[in-house]
Image (cartoon, rainbow, N blue to C red; front, side, top):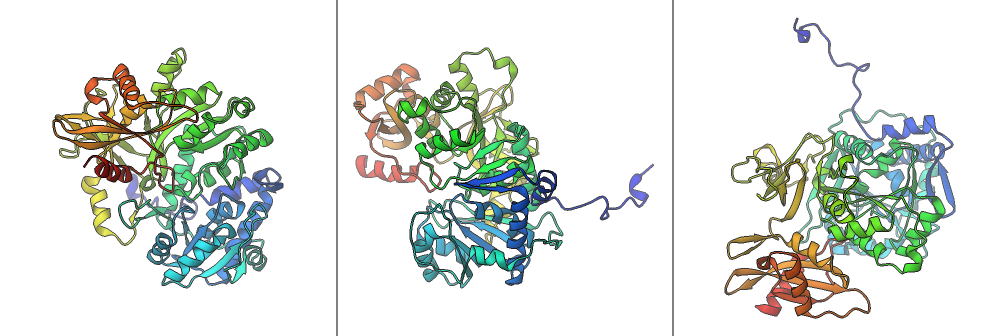
Length: 542
């Protein structure tokens, strides 16, 4: 029997487009009195959360927002930003989360390129957005978000404030504007360290699936209390505004990522989960001992953004945190690869555990394919933990493409895979481990040297706070490693001592031939700007 000949077609009863905004209605219906959001002294129930989202969405529609419009948000991690992750896509519009660390010129480019129609501005960022609007050709409806937790007094720049907008809306909003799960839900811009940022377009389907993937790989159960240390503008907070609602958890807002505030929130609200780049974990590890002693044990941490050195993972676990290492990019909705733990590793010592957890891991259940391929032949590399290839993705949690950039989209999707640009090896157990960005690998005397591997060794030194490695020209070897090192407070270290330490812990040809002590330049998302370091190398060494 051929079932396709019997009229079993898609209909309203058996098909509804996947969208993460449906998570809220289910949780609000089931747990209306449960606390959804905590911000300062304010505790917002799921019932109230749903009503405010309905008001937000219906007010936008009354103001003329329609399917395909762009609604941009420039805000800290506050309730209005969480609500925007539901209200904006409910209208069929596209949510454009703006990076709060960008300058006015970059923001103006994004407003123009993304064709901003409505702009919500947290008053802490009013000045930079005022300048960006003056540089932009767009004239969006500007709405001020006046947050009681914001201590920066600035002049209003909007036509109205957020509370006034909500008062224009209705408690019930039931327009069915999501007609296709391939509809654009969000627009996120890459860091743009070497030129204008690229606009990455997310679909409702992809966001739904990656949000579910987060819940599956990170054991989001038993009503998690999630602390917003991760910037919500970064890949839509790695899809966690939707993941936490899907499981009925509580989101604790945090305006400033500062270690005293982080620890205070952990204790005050019995935080169970938080996300952060390795730099955030390093900041916590190096806090004052009296503060470290007050941190509750057993808090689950998801880290991504840059490969965390095993020493950082070991240090955090010594403090009682449970680390899950993940990997992803803006183009794949944030993390979609996780270092899944296996019970047979439980008896390994702390160094072995940290080394295993430092590997990027295996694909989420919601990402169809992730592999390490030879970019020339497009064949998988051997699973020998040595052969380097490029990490590539294929599946539903891969972006729709780059907005208004067909050439970049075609290049990214060449041969039917998304090319990450990250170089990695594949272990015999199938776990992948990053060795470098393709542009960061150091080729010395014909041998490949992984800057990530060398950085991992440097982080093991008790005096080193941060480290980054780039190539420098070498008359003998073509290239050799140059290490940039930031020391911990009250420590003194010489170049020879750093080099000697490295020689004790790795093959001698991989050891840096020069060491520069300095602060490390970082992108707006906390990643080290290696292109700045390369320029510094050229100025120092020619």
